[in-house]
Length: 86
Image (tube, rainbow, N blue to C red; front, side, top):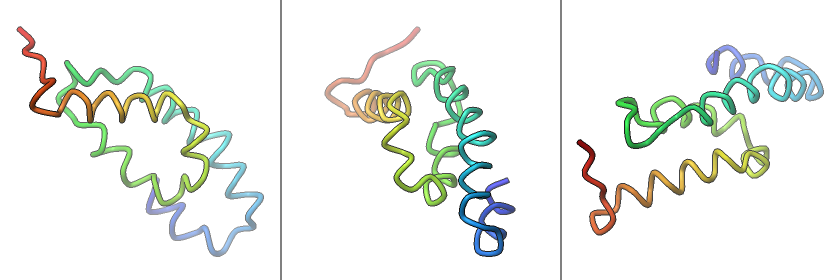
């Protein structure tokens, strides 16, 4: 989906791209970020969020839980604060 939107973003009007991102893509990403658990999920969040960052632009700042999830991930990956699970 990222490749499709990236290829079409120069051809479609800006309002259409904004609408697709706000109404279709970002709510699904938000739901996945809300469900993501850095302690138990085996797929790191950057593997599926990072490709969307160029299309997100300034919208990233409006997704506070995304920011919190990244912050938590960075915090937990620091050697000083690593948590042993199980």
